[in-house]
Image (tube, rainbow, N blue to C red; front, top):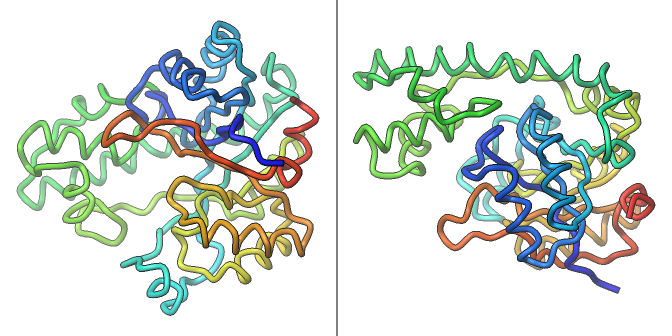
Length: 294
């Protein structure tokens, strides 16, 4: 049995999304999503708003966060070519879910304290990127960038200001020319390892899923082996960027290792026709903690 009732990967203005939490919840409902997770980058500052918005829209809120981590493996050139990708992401992202905290943050304080430096570390990184841009003749006021972020400030906020100030024609151009991984104004962010983040999430009563694995330039077999070796519970096989053949490949291999799957639109905003939901996933392969919370 397949379902499209889950969307477990979305963002709001609390990180690099363009919509208020209440707007994201409404769009989830309009897309027939019944189980929704807000997974802003390195922050849980939107959870309380999400609880209220989910209740108003009669959908189930599953607290989540997307944790920025160190790469787990070196990218494989053959896999990058196979999947037609120019480069691998310089960071790996781990989705952490806490179904038992859908009603309150009471009991998750230790995790929140561990997460805070990751969120706060984004500001010094942004300042260094702006300094690099200034050296390259691109002057960006930090205040304009911070105005775009309600929680975790990130590169999409900087890209948006670069467009507004006329330095680039689009956010994608900002990434492709200046602030993308390994480019002139990029600044590396201190990050935990996947194993470290997984251990902390497990200690707090949550589970983890490796986000958008296509981005890392690793063969599905090696990704699944990595997840097994590092106690990663699930893999986001059903991500909006994945072609059907890749989803099937990951799902099939995950089953052989007893690793569950998650699904997510990775919704950031309704630009370029992007919408939340509509993520078909085999119900019996979803992480059992999600099914229990349902």
